[in-house]
Amino acid sequence: MQLFIFVFCAILQIGYSFVVTNATRVCIIGAGIGGLSTARYLKAEKINFTLIESTKYVGGTWRYDERVGKDENGIPIHTSMYKNLRTNLPKATMELHGFPMPEDTPTFPSWEVYYNYLKSYAEHFDLYKCIKFEHQAISVKKIENEWKVKYKHVPTGKEVEEKFDYVVVATGHHSKPYIPNFPGESLFKGNIIHSHDYRVPDPYECRKVLIVGSGPSGMDISLDVAFVAKRLIHSHHSKVDFNTPFPKHYIKKPDIKEFNETGVIFTDGTYEEIDYVILCTGYEYDYPFLDKSCGLNITTHSVTPLYRHLVNINQPTMMVMGLVVRACLVVALDAQARYATALIKGDFTLPSQDIMMREWQKQYDTLRSAGRPLSHMHLLAYKEDEYYAALTEESGIERVPPVMFKIRTLDMQAKINNLYTYRNFAYTVIDNDTFVKSVEEEEAPRIFTCASDS
Ligand SMILES: Cc1cc2nc3c(=O)[nH]c(=O)nc-3n(C[C@H](O)[C@H](O)[C@H](O)COP(=O)(O)OP(=O)(O)OC[C@H]3O[C@@H](n4cnc5c(N)ncnc54)[C@H](O)[C@@H]3O)c2cc1C
Ligand SMILES: *[C@@H]1O[C@H](CO)[C@@H](O)[C@H](O)[C@H]1NC(C)=O
Ligand SMILES: *[C@@H]1O[C@H](CO)[C@@H](O)[C@H](O)[C@H]1NC(C)=O
Ligand SMILES: *[C@@H]1O[C@H](CO)[C@@H](O)[C@H](O)[C@H]1NC(C)=O
Ligand SMILES: *[C@@H]1O[C@H](CO)[C@@H](O)[C@H](O)[C@H]1NC(C)=O
Ligand SMILES: CC(=O)N[C@H]1CO[C@H](CO)[C@@H](O)[C@@H]1O
Image 1 (cartoon, protein in one colour):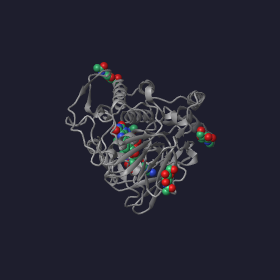
Image 2 (cartoon, protein in one colour):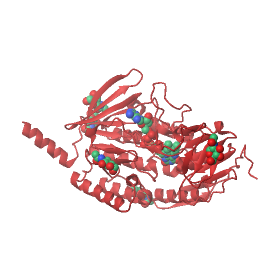
Image 3 (cartoon, protein in one colour):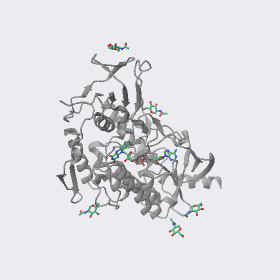
Image 4 (cartoon, protein in one colour):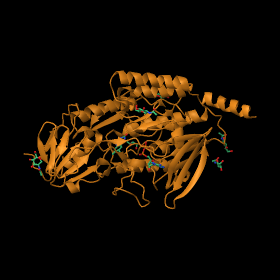
């Protein structure tokens, strides 16, 4: 009997595809775009799942919350939204499969318009009743052939343990701030926050503000704060040649050398007096609930080894969604959810663990020999469309059309040309490969309320 079980399990392990029955159980962690999409497709296939979400809400990071720190249940506030945020990608690249946004949606909607879209998505596919709100995953363990997931009802602390065949991790990765240490920062008398806690520009009115970092948040928050600040100092080392006509009170600086009581000395030896610092230094990958038995190696900026940036090679019944960067993340998440569903349903089987590992090792070696950091493992960038093609070729899911990548590329160019005007363009999809770019009516320029620009 024992031998029989062993052989049976071994067969299951080689193919990595269970026969789906009503007994197959999937655990989805997180009800942001990744978790909601996965729930939608599993539900359509009548595959049994449990979706746990630590807050009372769907939509993940898209639900703005004016609070920072902890919520009413003592859980760290997850969202990194700020009040004036508008999407940095046009709506065409942020639409979920077969669920168009309302006609009157602006090309670059506010967080609020987009969040309402996500809520209507959850309503349309009747997902609310499938979600265990205010339940937080606290431990995920692989024991023999099963996943043991422990989760907690946060208001009462009551813990539950459930067994699953598959685990889909969809907890996002824009929530735990990455905070570098700077020499002398403990001397500094001003206030330092991370962009995760940035909400409104009001506290910076007529102040001297230092923004650190030039990622999407660094660029966008710089503009938001510059409207009210007296002086906006932007420290970064991006090699991108931003052509934006910044106002005169926007001052570009290199990296920080050190802080003192009143300000910052930069690596070029110059000094600026500073009242407030906003660190737009990005986020850490953080999956505190994943036990060692999951077989993933998680560092600040990497999660390895993964197949297709999604499947945990050491435990291929676990998927970690949305790790890719420099991509249309929403359509990427949607495609990953369809791929995951096809895998669980048994529409296709994964290659053997050996083959997946060898492929991963090849990518790793290429990266390392090019002297690039491990974090670049998750970079899609110009390989984005190839990624969608590969997902489809392997799993048979409907392909994300190449037009998505094309629009993102042009939007990125427009952003580099002028951060103040890139949202004045509209992108209309014509077919899978083509789109039309047009100029929308320009908004009235916002004025700088403290600094004069003359
Ligand atoms: C400021 C900002 C602006 C952005 N702008 C854009 C944009 O313009 N266009 C674009 O395409 N993308 C943008 N993004 C990227 C954005 O992350 C994705 O659009 C998308 O929201 C990611 O969805 P997700 O489901 O992976 O994660 P999230 O939206 O982060 O959702 C994760 C969910 O998991 C829950 N959770 C976390 N831990 C647990 C746990 N232990 N147990 C249970 N539940 C848990 C959280 O409460 C949350 O609801 C932006 C991100 C940020 C932070
Ligand atoms: C899912 O599985 C559980 C446990 O076996 C069962 O109680 C429940 O009815 C199933 N749900 C569906 C929709 O099949
Ligand atoms: C901080 O350093 C600058 C540049 O050296 C100097 O001008 C300023 O007085 C220093 N501040 C204090 C409080 O020492
Ligand atoms: C995890 O990855 C880091 C970064 O590549 C590496 O230094 C470390 O040895 C790895 N740990 C394990 C257990 O594989
Ligand atoms: C667009 O692509 C989808 C998916 O590959 C395909 O089903 C559809 O026929 C294509 N449409 C056109 C007009 O080519
Ligand atoms: C995968 C599977 O077998 N699903 C079935 C579960 O039970 C419902 C209701 O009896 C069926 O409709 C599904 O096909």
